[in-house]
Image 1 (cartoon, rainbow over the protein chains, first blue to last red):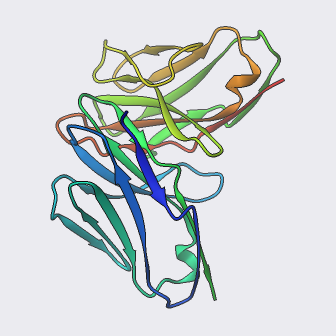
Image 2 (cartoon, chains in turn red, orange):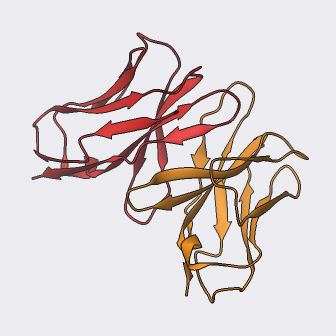
Length: 109
Length: 113
């Protein structure tokens, strides 16, 4: 069964305390892996797309990496404005997309 | 550019009532999608349209119908609403030319009593 699992479910960090979020998947025929940020009451906001194992993308304090079975979203020296839910999605064959349930990140000043 | 817009933002229905959720995008994207988001379940794909004139079922299509009115607009219809359809509904679009990054609308919050 195609599945996307994110861990941890929730993460509390002190401002400046770096950490990583995990997204593992069992979707066959991966066509792309996507990271989104979602603020309360809003739609997901696109962050990164990764297509092949070994690929890395960076944006400000965020860095996404991809292996054959999982992806990591590394957050370096986070700030309170980085608090949000981070969603991982995987595209399988065709236009089928599978989302994880997200990691809720809280950064404490 | 407005990106992806959805109407209404919030709706309350009684069981058995019908309604249509509207979605439009101004990015000239080929593909459009409808998702529902429930606590602890993540986003689940209801229907998608790879291009104008085509629609396909996603993971949870039962109880819904869709119409790809033109390249810009993709509507989701609930013919006879049920309490199990209480959810937040998101529309998304992507270029659809081997670039499937999806851009989401702000969502419609639906409560079925």
